[in-house]
Structures are given as C-alpha cells and as structure tokens.
Image (cartoon, rainbow, N blue to C red; front, side, top):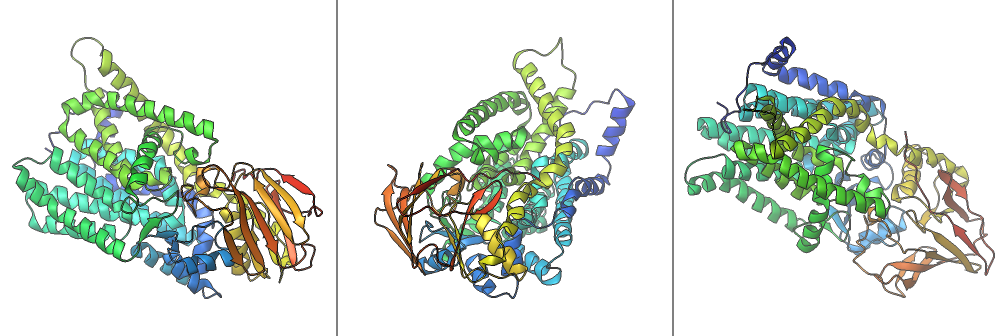
Length: 603
C-alpha cells in the first residue's frame, strides 16, 4: 500500500517484454538509471557555449569596470531594476535599458542559492561554458533521483517508477537544464521535492523528524526561488485530498508551511523584492488584479505546453492572430483534458492530489510570460496523472469495448502517453539547446566594428533589448574598443519612419506605438502611460515624446543630439538582413521608412 492512497490494481503483464518493463520500473536502482538517462538526453547542453544572460553573468561576476554596480542593480543576475529612479536613469544612460523604461521599475528576485552556484562558476571556470552546463546537469540528475523516491513513496514501486520515467523524459525540462541562468529552478525543485517526500514519509510513518525536515526543506526551497510556493500547493492538496482524520489535525500539520510562507513573503516585501512596472513580470503581492487577469490568460497556454504542443513560449512571440488561435486551442484542450481525466478522478482519490497540485503550481508559473521552462513544478503532478491514467486504461474493462467518456479518456490518454514516452525523449535534446536558437543575435555582434571606439553608437532600430546589450557585453568581455556611449532609439518589430527635422535632430514615428508586442513589455507595462512632452535627458541627447497612441504609448518621439548628425562623434546603425548595418542619414526635411527589425531564430 502506498502512502498517498490505495494503488491502482496492477495486473500481471501478458507479454514477456511487459513483464521485463514492470520489473525494471520496480527495480530499486531505477533512480540511478533514470538519472543517467536524464544526463544523456540533456548532454547536448555541454556543446552549446554561452547565450544571452550567460554574458550578463560573465560580466557582472567579473572585475571589469562597472561590473560591480550592475551586479548590485541586477541582484546577482536575478533582477533588472531596483525601483530607484536614479539607478534606472543610470542604466538608460549606460545602454543597459531602453529609454522608455519605467523610472520606478522593480524586478528583484530572491535566489541566494542560485547566486552562490554562479559565483562558484564564474570565479572558478569563468570561460568554460561546458563546465557550467555540467554543473547544471548534476542538479538535474539529483532532481531525477529525488523525484523517483518521492513518486514511489506516493504511488508505489511500479506506478511511481512509471511516473519517474515520464518525468525524466519530459521535454519541458530541457530549456531549464540547458540554460545556465535557470539553474536556480533545478535547485528549487530539488529542495521542494525533498520537502514533499519527507512530508509523505511523515504522513505514512508518523515520523516527527521527517515532518521537521519537511518544514526546513520547504523554507530552504523558498530561499532558492519563488516557484517553491508551488510545493505549498501540493502540500495543501495532499491535506485536502489524501490525509484522513479531523480537519483540525490536518490543518495543524499544514499550518507551519503557511506560516513559513507568510514570513517569507513579509521579509520579501520588506526587502523591496518582487516585481512592479513590468508587463512580463507580475507580482501577485503587488498587483493582484493584473495578476489574476494574467493567470486566466496564461494558465491554459501553460497546460497545453505541459501536456501536448506547441510550446508555451510561442504565445508571446507569434503574431496576434496566431496567438489568439493558440489561446482558443489551449482552452479547448484544457476542457478536453478535464473530461479525459474524469474517469481517473472518479475512481482514484490520489489523482485529485496530483491535479490540484499541478493547477496550484500554475500560480507562480503565470507570474511571467508563458514558457515551458515555467512548468517544472507542474510536471510533478502532470506526470503522476499520466502514469495513473495509463495504469487505469491498461486494466481490462468489464463487458465490451469502453464507450462514451471512458473511450474518450482512453484515446486521449493514449495520445498523451505516446507524446511523452515516444516523442518527448526525442525532442528533449533539442529543447535543451533551445536557448541556442538566439544564435543570430550573437552572430550579429561583430557587425559593430572597432570604428565605434570613442564615438556614440546610435542604433536606430534593433530586434530586441539584447541585440544592443550583447554588443556592449561582448566588447567588454573581450576587451575590445568601446563606444563612448550606447544609444538605442527603437526596439522590437516596429515599422519605423525616420524624419530628419534639423541638422541635429531625428523624429521617429512608430506605426503601432512602442510596446506593440507583449514580449517588449519587459521594462514597462503598456498600462503605464507616457505623456506628451515627457522628456528623458541623457548626456548629449534629449528625448521628447511628441504623440501617443490612444492607450498612452509613445508613437512619435524626437531625438535631439548635441551636434550635427554627420559629426565624426556619431556612428549610426539599423537592423537589416540579420545584423546591424550602417544607417544612411536622410537630409534635413527628408524621411526614411525602415522595415520591422525582425529576428529570425535559428541555430
């Protein structure tokens, strides 16, 4: 008998191969085999190198000029701004943030254990990407070992082994394993699953020591990442759906987790941690209304990404009409999933525990833009549900072939099982290298040559924030000559018209306004309006908003420099053909229309 509830009956397999599989999944050494399998499936990360935020880490953990100040503003790599307008202005001035950044922007996250591991990496082997990736994969292997133990405590040797196999194969873990900056998620998940396992052991054996260990591990998980709150959701679901006895006694056992969470959140807020002012990061503690709206939109997208396809991250980058179609499909799929799980939920009480825990895990996952990397905690419950569903339909049905809802459940379960047992492990090596799809940004860096040394590098258009930031980071890390200043006038796939109104002045008109796509709202929520006449004063550049879209986003902006634009001190670029090209300035009174700065992702 398992610690969650009665196990589904496990009939004797009819074939020799099925019996071999059952013995293997029930083997005491299964965790070691699965850990090795996880390392193999994600080993493609060892050959990737550095991408995006990896360069931020290499810089802020270095002894280079300006690195320490940016380290503090970025909170060790887990933040972008501290809410102080003066520090925000410093970032704009030095080319680390766009000119439209909300002056009170706050994105500071509490992940000291992750910071400690990155400090070790960048101080010990700062240029060895493969060692940093190997470091992350070790945490992944430890997580698989811990998951195998937890599943078996909850579901018994065979079904627990099957759930562990599905977890190991789950391709949604690939991005987390392959992106060095996401290592904190693996650490948080490991501590969280250890807490859950100790809680299950305490429930099964009445062990006070195990219960105290569970409380301590949950607190440690919160110190590693905010997503650990998902574990509280699983624990609450366990008390509600699995544990027996008086409600008061069950509430008393859960109460310490609740108190730990309240204390953590109080300290978190007092330390000015969290998010405010960004459209991509929404802190439920600071903006609950916006968060609830975002949760209702993002939750179906995340569930679709967890159980089937396409990956959740496409929702933020696809054109609006495709994104709407994806949302509709995600809602339909979520409803179909609920119907497909109903025969299991009706029979097996523990299935409610896994389902409610998975749904609760969407609460922290939905605090940022949808991405499969947010699904690690959701997969805890999702893989257990798939294992239980597979076991349910593997049993013979009394009478004739299953009909109605049971038949639909079997067909849907078969589709999901095939996707996760056959397709998912094949896709895992590719998702592990998912961040490498941003390679075109890195390849574009050399298009800004050494002739910018000591000059103002002005980027009229760029596909996203990192396009310009990478230029600065790489040149600093490789000790290449630096521009005097970095100035970026536009980011994102905007149709931009450039008008030369004076010898020293350009006016840019953004056809759909700045922040026209959700992914561009990192530094400013589109709901925070700008004002006509609003000015940003930088060294050698005055920026003034001339016109707004109906919802308050800048649409026409004047950029007045401190010298005629043909002066030797300037070097102008725009994005075309996958890299930065020199921008030919229009004459006074003339204008030039620029195509959207599109980034074609690829390896």
